[in-house]
Image 1 (cartoon, rainbow, N blue to C red):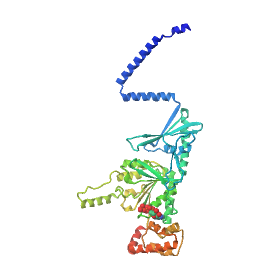
Image 2: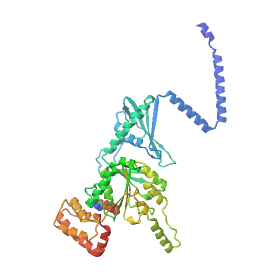
Image 3: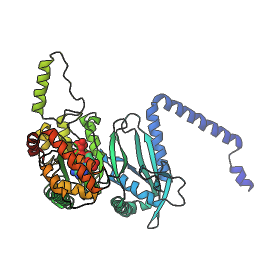
Length: 466
Ligand SMILES: Nc1ncnc2c1ncn2[C@@H]1O[C@H](COP(=O)(O)OP(=O)(O)OP(=O)(O)O)[C@@H](O)[C@H]1O
């Protein structure tokens, strides 16, 4: 024991070794600070820290960002749909809310708040999820969200091979069975789509259209949805464009709602003016999800980009001739070629099962390039009220299939231009069907006299459905 103590260095020796090591460390540190620039020092220390934590920790982390290679990240969306089903007793906070203004008593929906931990278990693995958010300040969208999944390092392969596929499967069925549809509008400020619940009662059943045309639209939609393999086989993007045209109040918006309800697709409602540039338009497009309708209502209003180039030039020339000093107005931002690419360019094929619906009151004003197949595959004319459309409206609004006065009404409809919206408004007036029909006959007669029979008949040839 005594000999062992004798072999140990004395306290004074230890102190002098400590002093020399500290002095050496200080010297190296000073030299490093002098010689290596600060960013480089930070980089080296972060790498050393990463390496140390990787060696010491037995965890593995997956990061799932909201966007992936310039498009919406479907894995993020799947996790977002799946995780609320895994909320358990260990969850210590929840995001709840309702976006159903028409149903204030609806129970709030649950979502995952930022920084909240959700613990999931799968095949004996413990999986720890957290939703994170960072403020990107410079770039749009400002907020960048991502999911962080921590698991044991040894479980990494099983998570990739079994856990993520089962999340994708579950999320698909959750999204298919969602009882509410959403309608999105694009917010220029935040460069993001904002959603609210879409509850429009229009269905193909309530729509007053020529029965053959209605059947044709339904069959076209059915065949579109069922032909994934066909689209792949012929090398075309799985998307379809519909142009709905006709005077105001003929049911274009109602048909869009009926299509959304029929297919259970969300609607992205875009005002072309809200895009600042063609690049913005691409971002807008790639931020929409699959199985959705991209709706551009009244494409010819508020912006000239969609108009027939030849006609715009003529109009412009006329105006400049009239007012030679006037600076010609042009639409900033989106160009016609941007819009054409948006509808049928390489970017438009990012995503599956997309329907694009464009509506206009003036098809003749649109540039022919917008109307060609591939952009607008089906053109649907929504026209003035026909006898068949009237019978449909009478059944919907008054609950009647036939009355003797129908003959008079149908004769009047042959010689008067009246929109289904006007008819619907008349049929909503009173509860008693006979009184409503009588007042409707007066309305049609007044309208016919107002329009003048011959003028009405000319317009009729242009405007009738079918
Ligand atoms: N074909 C129709 N079948 C059933 N209802 C219709 C039809 N057309 C119009 N309506 C009724 O008229 C209202 C207005 O119609 P809608 O907004 O669909 O017309 P629109 O053609 O889109 O008009 P706008 O071009 O002004 O937007 C609807 O809420 C609906 O009640």
